[in-house]
Amino acid sequence: MIARASEWILFVSVAGVLYPVVGYPLILLVISKLRSWPVRKASYLPQVTILIPAYNEAECIARTLENKLEQDYPPEKREIVVVSDASDDGTDEIVSRYAQQGVKIIRREVREGKASALNAAVASVTSEIIIFSDANSCFADDTVRKLVENFADPTVGYVTGNLEYTHSGQTTGRGGGLYMRYENWLRTLESNVGSVIGVNGGVDAMRRSLYVPVPKEQITDFVLPLHVMATGSRVVFDESARSMEEANVQMGAEFRMRVRVALRAFNGLRYEKAVLNLIERPLSAFCVVSHKILRYIGFAFLLGAFLANAALASRGWFLRDLFVCQSAFYVLALIGWRGGLPRGIRRVTDIPAYFLMSNVAFAVATFRFLRGDTLATWKPRAG
Image 1 (cartoon, one colour):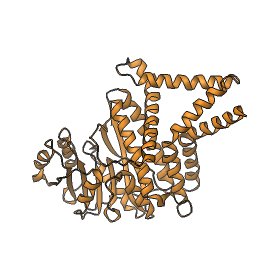
Image 2 (cartoon, rainbow, N blue to C red):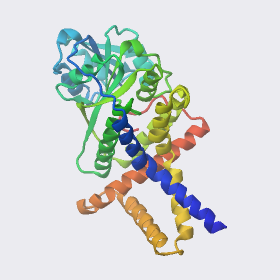
Image 3 (cartoon, rainbow, N blue to C red):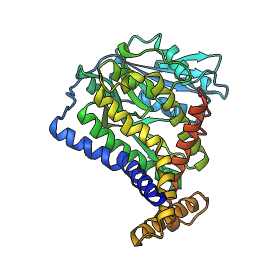
Image 4 (cartoon, one colour):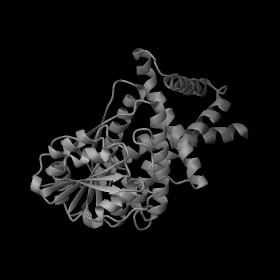
């Protein structure tokens, strides 16, 4: 009886681990063959506002502003607005030096987080299209133009671009880079059938008419696309709209970032629960569950697979070898968490370490969500 229960737990757990990573993309491929929905892009030059929320970004804000001023987009149709969330490290003074080049700054005296900062900034925006950039995001020269071309299609309400991580070879940088490449491939599939689930918050754009104020404890990068989907408009991915950011190379910082993103995504789904309505929006509900929810609770499947496999390891060579493979994977992951490893060892441990770190972070986020935690502010690039 116990063995039979362990077999079922192992089967369900392995399926729960593999489905979001392999099964879901395969289903999207089949749907796209049966019903593809390409974006009708065209040359389009509306008035745009580039919004940059910033908190203590003195180290990188000048480089970011220079990057946005150099965009291949008509200057008379572009404004740049930095909203400082009570920065106290000289960020505001640096931004003020660009006033003669048309850069505006909105200072908030009380720090309340990205959502409140964007709400305050958007209230004064009259442009048709809002471009969102992180304070450390550097766009390719044509990124604004590439993002905006998608809005020539009236069904499109939100566009996310291609975020590329640069790194110096450390574990988190390479693991994060591989994760983003996989995510971008998945977003391409989702765009082909409807809307993407999850966006790159540092290189996004949306119609001003679709923006709604977001509660300060919510994650704008998640709630706003879900809201756009709920209105019936599409959220699409454009791989040609490129942005670069320096990857986290400290495992602790990446871990805190993963906890924060997952926790706020759970709260965002509770806030925009209309997209989970299987009757009214079956495709969006299917994609959200497959891409996000099952991914975030994958730690439970991983634990179930390991424990059930341990109980069954003596029942044949296949189950024994499967348990050895699982154990070896986690040993490599734990080794990869250590700093200062030789490059050859890092090549073997990078992916297991990043995978395990992410799932532990998702477990922490799930526990905090069930406990009722929310989060509005954090330290840039430190989680």
